[in-house]
Each structure stands twice: as structure tokens, then as C-alpha cells.
Image 1 (tube, rainbow, N blue to C red):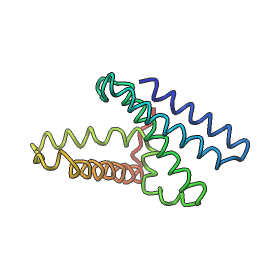
Image 2 (cartoon, one colour):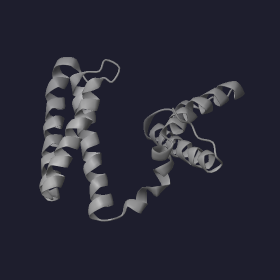
Image 3 (spheres, rainbow, N blue to C red):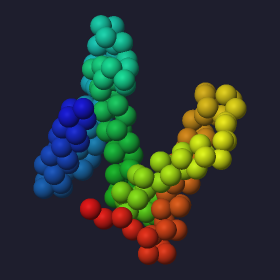
Image 4 (tube, helix red, strand yellow):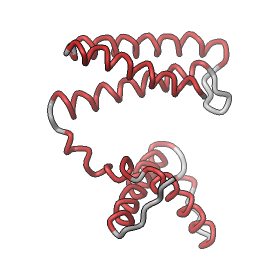
Length: 156
């Protein structure tokens, strides 16, 4: 959906506007207000179209945009205001070798398929499924880092 990308562009423009003025506290308040507004829009539009990623409903768009904006605020606060950017160094390979990191899951899925590995239903749903997905994502980043350190990189 182009709207997700456009949302990122708008947040960037808001960031740049307040950065020029060195008004970062005001920026955080504005972005937080936008997030609250997006959540309210999501709740309102859900009554008409539901919330579905597959159907790309407005409620889904607004909710994802709100969550992304809140995540940006949190990361900005930790990394730039509290000066703790090193906390995110463990995911650096995902940013420095993005294409490789993006493709790693496809290789993993193919390997699992070839080996005939089947996860039990418990591992695929609910809180356990979310935790498994989080660990898998981190494992993909770790594998990307290992491959990058050994000279394996993908470039367009």
C-alpha cells in the first residue's frame, strides 16, 4: 500500500521540521497526538470495513501507522535523547545488509520444507507463535551478520 510509505514520508517531514527548530519535545508530543488520532480513526473505520491486512482496510492502515509512529518515538527517545543507540547494535546487520536479511527466511523455509520439518500447532499460534516468530526474526539477523562478516553480501 502506498499509504504506508506516504505515512513514513510524512513522519520524516515532521521530524525534519522540528529538527530544524531543535524542538524535539514538541515533536514527540505532535507525533504522539498523531498516533492517538490514528488509533481513533482505526477504531472508527473498523466498524465499516473491519480490520484486515489481506484486504488492506483503512482500520488496518491507521492502526499499523499508529504503532509504527509510536515505535519511532520510543526508538528516537532511547537512541537520540537517552544516547543509548548501542542498545540496537544487535540488529545492525538488518540495516546494513537489508537484502540478504530479507532473503534469509526464504532459504530457511525452503530448508524446513526439504527436511520435512512440521511445527506443532502450539508453535504457530498465540503467544508462543509470536515468540517463535520474534526469535526466528532475530535468528535471521544473526545469520545475516555472520554471512556479512564472512564476506557474503548482496547488492543491487
